[in-house]
Length: 279
Image (cartoon, rainbow, N blue to C red):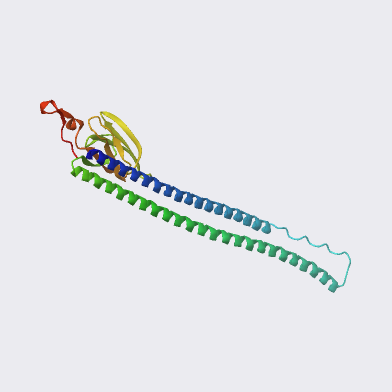
């Protein structure tokens, strides 16, 4: 087995390991996002319950304010002494005050009950908000950690490719592209950056492959793009490892020799012998 074939297998193995790692971390991020959605739903339910309690409290207050006054008692046609008339007037007034006091005690009891429920709901909302903030901080921390690990992995892979370059097998071409309809030459490729989504860390490219444009859409950062060219023995690898607003940076890894450089040529004496290849 040639060293060139072994090197290609090594590059493919590194790419597969990076892809598996990215899928596993994406799954963890999805779990944290689901937890945040559940917390948001609980917070919305608590707010709806507080609004219902507030409506009931307002209705109870309006009912108490609009309660009719007790009807006056009819005066007795029977004449009595001045002392008897005073006792007759005092007794209805006392009963009216007692009825009014009982009604307001009931209203105050209802108000106290609703205020207690509102206080409990406020505490639950505060706790839910704190849980949401904590979950968000944990999710952001894990996403940042995953991004850093992926960047370190891609950097390591690029170092490995640089080592292959020193061994004379592949060339590395760094690029810094801005959003434009014009194509920029990067090694054996002509590339045009068409769209950048910094929120989801994706981008769209247009690549000229054998004089024909090929569109690559919704490509993730650090996701390798493999392009096969007619005159190269191995695919060209393109990786974007930095995304900014309307701008991306990365590198292209291409075989150092073309097919014509490593083709078999006739040797002296009529024996077919291959030219020396990069190992």
